[in-house]
Length: 132
Image (cartoon, rainbow, N blue to C red):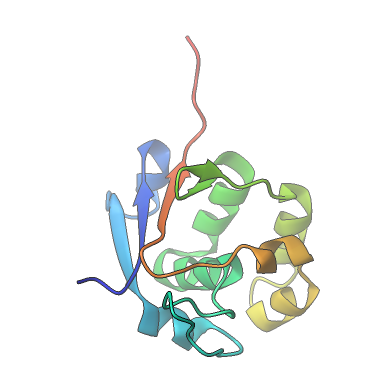
């Protein structure tokens, strides 16, 4: 059984991933990127693994331009629920500190840290929809 999270990409988001439409990220990798490692609870969740951790991994794997594209243009869905994020604040911090994620982590608003990732979570990066 897979121990981690899955991320799916659609449409223009796949241009940043070389047409990869799905990533599976093991919890061990998530913990490696997490600044503070917590103890697993009964559900396999780690208190320190959150959306900031995910952005760190995607930045290293694909590039900062992908993070910027997600924040500016895409919706983020966690287990079938859209996340409400202060995109302007997040983007300002990522641009200002893109080379030092520890500074981002220390300055990001509480909302990002409240979005915890758990074993089995599914994240979907939803590109903008054009009407026609």
